[in-house]
Image (cartoon, rainbow, N blue to C red):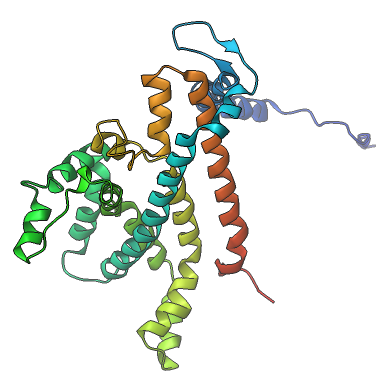
Amino acid sequence: MATQALPQPDGARRRMSVRERREAIEGYLFIAPWVFGFLVFTAGPMLASLALSFTKWGLIDTPVFTGAENYVRMVKDPLVWHSLYITARYTFLTVPLRLIFSLGIALILVRPIPGVYAYRGIFYLPNILGGVVTALLWMWVFNPDYGILNYLLSRIGVAGPSWLSDPDWALPAIVIMSVWNVGTGVILFIAGLQSIPTHLYEAAELDGAGRWASLRYITLPMLSPTMLFFLITSLIGSFQVFDIAFVASSGSGGPLRSTLVYLLYFYQNGFRYFDMGYASALIWLLMVIILLLTLLIFRSSSIWVFYESEVRR
């Protein structure tokens, strides 16, 4: 007579087989390098900077706990608000321009034109060069005496400004440097455009819709998830701008602090004045600002982001 297995009581855990236990161990071993790297190089420094933000530390001495003194000092520091203003101006100029240029170039390069893959590589080339190389290149372009940009302007009868030496033009010059680097956005939008079903355009064409109508009612709504990703990553990157402002102003944020972006001010406090406690507090303020702006974009996405699988009522 066959015996029946007794039912296990509620909450009892089934014992893992040898194979399941081996697979679990192998899985933990595979993720162990990432976990170790995250704890040592990301989570650890973040917690350390949070602790240091409540201290006064000159990098070579012993940190002294000062409570919320650094954060009170930030509120009263006019350069904090000035650098945030410069960074916000840079962001709200750079992000929309990069979005427009990236999408416009992607709409051209998504078509089957001769040499399209070479053009895509050319537009992505500035991303490979890096921020420092880009800044050095554009410093030659913006040179008021022998720069190619002012030379071209003089050929059409326009006297070019001093660019990086002029407080009114230094920040726009840095914006131009950043907008030139649209390769990532172009590749991202090309991928988004290629994922749009062609039958939508065919149906629109049968209904008599022109190119502008198709762009407005098909392309842009279907690209809205890609735009959401682009806006968030561009916003985070723009608030973390440092290298081009540092190289263009030789680390001073000049002329007249017109290019003193927030991370440059953080760098000056931490590595020029060796006030690491205050610099740690500055970086945590930036993280909170970026987090709030990212959450704001996410909250607004329900209004303008369309997902093909969702049904709206």
